[in-house]
Image (cartoon, rainbow, N blue to C red; front, side):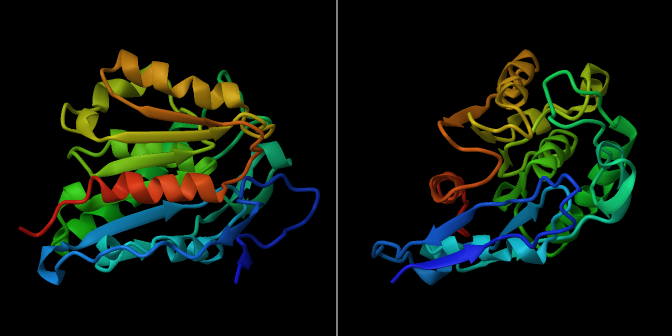
Length: 253
């Protein structure tokens, strides 16, 4: 039996939102053998939503992560504060930082002060999880659209190596002036970047500019392009994310 879940709630139609707008199907997972319980270490996945969205609206994503390796995973779906957004004529909505124009291109102006403030909040969440005893190698930050841009900034500016950062339909939200703050440890954090070629909200070129930017900094990045995918997330992307994280999880041994 297939079950459809709509990941976002609509807001006023005149506002541009970067939330997930696609319905994805929860497929029955194949049977997998479970590892021994004592081999599974605590892990943490932080999901950052898009403009105008909310954390709770994205919680169905975790239901796709059915592998036994995620039995000890703690998920967090925070909601962005409400702020005026320039691209929406100053209307107030859930936004991690300001966005000046739509569509977002590789050359769109960047709210660096806003992104740095948002990064501090994300780092506080990561610090709290580290204090709870989670290995930094088992901490993953993921985000869609504006949340994807914040994900990139957050993992690159965190002073330690994390398990990984996964960007979906995002962009580079800062200029080279910030790169001097990226530590050698942060450069070791694996990056997964996924983007739909048919995206007309955050143009594919904006996402495609990410890996070359990172390569100049000596940071490796796995980039995956999805033909026909607009500004949304599909099952294929999320199933790949599950596998990508699973191969990077550290055991407790």
